[in-house]
Amino acid sequence: MAHEHQERYSSLVLAKMRAENILKDGIIFNNDYEGDPVAGAVKVPVRDDEVKVGDYDRTAGGELSEGSTIYRTILINREKYVNELIDGYDAASVPDNLVADRLDSAGYSMARVMDSDGASALISQGTRVNLSSLSASTIYSEVVGIRSRMSKANVPNDGRRYLLVTPDVYAEMLKSEQFVKASDLGAEMIQTGALGRMAGFNIYEWNDSTANLAMIAGHPRYATRVNAWKVPVAVNDLKDAKHIGASAVQGRSVYGHEVLRKSAIYAVFSAGSLTLAQGAWAADKCKVTVTESATGSFVYRVNPAERAKLGEDFTAIAASAAFTSNSTQIPCKKGDVIEIIDLDSSKQCVKVGYVTVA
Image 1: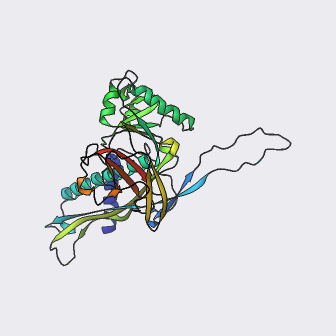
Image 2: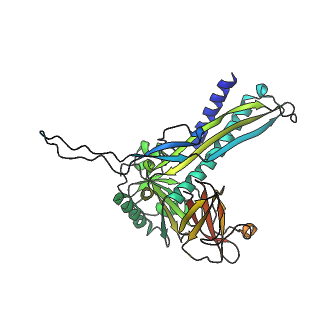
């Protein structure tokens, strides 16, 4: 019975996560991989070229071509858990409504964390685009520019290209004559969560506050999400010699994200961002070079729970996390996301930049 509860509870949390994810599977990420995520790594097929087509000769036949599909190893380097106390009840006597409330909350919280990490992967591994500003009069032209880049990179224009846009950018889109509401495109579009379409992109509003980030453009074929339960969700009795008549909702999840083609994913910043390049990685440390000069000073973070916001105060870490381009040895592991933050004289965030440790 306990095993059945684990499967049922895990399924309920997973369903809640899928419902709450803004960066949804099938819309933003694909789930094509081989292997067991719990083992720490999986293989993902990557093919940049299509199958070669030639003229067939009935006598000589046709030359055999070689496929260009390769398998990239993705590290499953994120592990999260839930472990919430339910006081006054042992596992067998927890009311169903209380279990449902805890599972609902667990699914919501884990979806937010996974979306944040997924977005960090898209931003740090995709192509960065800097714009001076975005307005109702310029936004369509800028979106068309991104569309042209993707078409030249042979990203399929099959109705699955997407734009994740911040609320401010979405407000400007609504003022544009070229914005087409989802209700005018049919029920299928509405069911995906899209709010409309512009220049062939499905538009999804995304309440993100990363400094100067305006939107992310991409196609689900070129970014993979891998996730699995390492320890399925269950309500367990606490037998730790401290708690009496208590239980907890417990579970552990592992996951990872990977951009498969840099030229198919675009992180678009309005008012600028930092240009980063990772140096050699050794002994769990690496250097990062920043092309731009600091407004006042730089600081760094590794795998930030929330990306830096414009105007956010970083006085608290200005000394302990001080960063000098191509000098500071940053402690990190492969797959970690490094965030470099440009601070003004008041130690407030002006710009950010991201790179995934390769």
